[in-house]
Length: 338
Image (cartoon, rainbow, N blue to C red; front, side):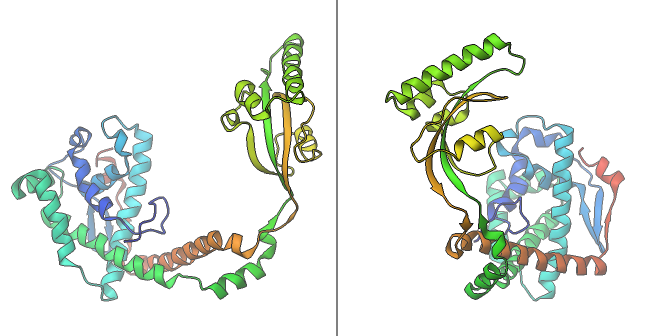
């Protein structure tokens, strides 16, 4: 099954994600949200979404490493908003899937049930746990079916969103200016920081240190080793390697001018900026030009197909919301575990 991160709407819900909607209930944090009753937090047409199920989805957004700690109220509200959006869209897209004749695969639903029953020790214990969370066994099965249907529908939409090689080439030609690459060069960097409130003697002391390091480099000592030993930025762990830097993108004009006036392998003098003192070493230059089609193709394909998928999906959701109006009950949300 194709699996794409949940922070994008261009995804399929993984089998693991569906299981986690219930498995997260094993952690102690969940008991504080358990309820013998379950308010209605939203309606999609005549379909009701319960606070019990919404809370389970909220918990699936909590990072697994953080399930034993308290989640601050503001973050929980963010998770709740994300979860509510998810369950509403799953409900709507499941309706569309059924309209298209997509059928539930009973064996997959049975497998989810089997795994959960085994994790709880018995069917009775599993159902007792569900009821304690405000979820009926039938409601749980219904949601598992909905996620399965939405997966199948999303798979169809993904297949319909594929760009052919010719379409990609056409997009590249028509949007060539978007693929312009500015002049760039590889740079190596040593920084000796000076606090903003430093006195002039402090500045002079750091300048002397920088000049001493520069003298050692010019005498033949390795720039990368000097960067690792003396630089105050995190690039010291990469021997001062900044990678390719585009012209005009450095923190100050002084640095930019010094960097792009160097020859390959040449080391600059000590450059003073508001941050302190810098020593630069020039690497390979890359002239201004265009990113080739082959270089751009993979990223372009991903972005275009994701946009086409999202456009298709948004169009379906917009149409469905007219036929099945969505109602969100704020008072019920406030009493549903926040």
